[in-house]
Image (cartoon, rainbow, N blue to C red; front, side):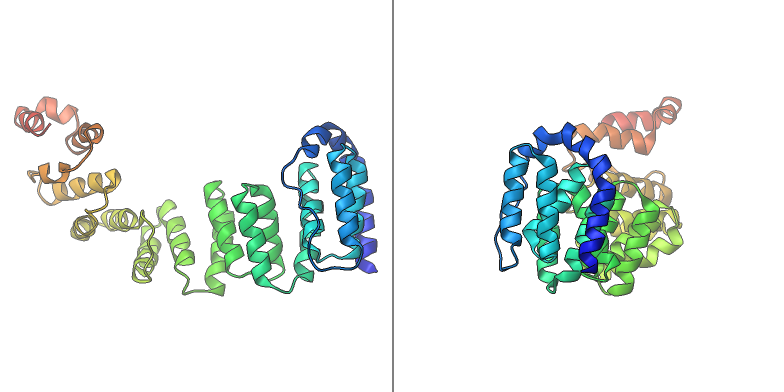
Amino acid sequence: MRAGFRMRALLLLALSVACQAAFRNAESIAVDPHWVDSSGATDSGAIDANSRAIEFLRSRETEAGLLKLQEAVELDPGFAPAALNLAHLYVLLEETASAREVYGQFIAATASDDVLFQIGQDLEEQRRTEEARTFFEGCVAAGRLSPESSLWLGAEALRQQEYARAARFYDLAFAAAPEDVRGIFGLALLRFMARDWQAALPLLQDARQAGSEEPSLPYLLARTHYELGNVRQTVEIARSAAQAYDIELVQLHGRALLVLNYRADLSPLLEGVPDRDRETLLRSWYGEEDLRDNPELYLEFQQMF
């Protein structure tokens, strides 16, 4: 009863803004491919209300569809098709707070974490990023789907370059599952990007020991050692990862060898390097100004190239 009252109050608050958005977006809403038709086990009337709502939406009667979806969710907050449709409609109407409320009630009414995980995966695969973000935030707030929800949110925040937000979610993931290599690597990457080499090194080492298969891990570890002055470790890591071509790692490998011996022969590093990258690497190692001022080095450059 209380849930129904809260949802009605939320609807009344949202309708004044949603009506204008609904009028503007009725055409795109009508042809949206993501409406979920009714299926599932419920005898509450939610199936009929959800089906009728989709008919309204496809007929460009957005407000009527909104009301019917609201009715379906009130009848059964855990009925996935209605909850997902209502949250999706709110997102289209730019009412994210309302979508968050719907997801929160649905998550609370859903016993299975497997169901929640599949919904999150489906939203991501359909590239409904804003909805996936709102959904996983609801899972975190409810203490559900841990650490998957925090890991997804941390990675998504990193892609958006929201580093403080990413750190918060990776910290949550690490606290929930300190052995999960994804959380370890996420924290390591954040420390690396902050140029906090001392903090990044043990996390990167832990990620490698835990079996991380992140393709960037060798470079991150080698670069961190290099920045800390551990040049020989940089060379060792670069050599051990030589089977996987990474221009940044090859470039770093050459720089480290030149630190150890300025006359080091770097030509072996160019074996198998694509032609488009060879000049880039040589110039990064030897530079142009130095070559012009040093005929001997310039000759070596020409011979290698």
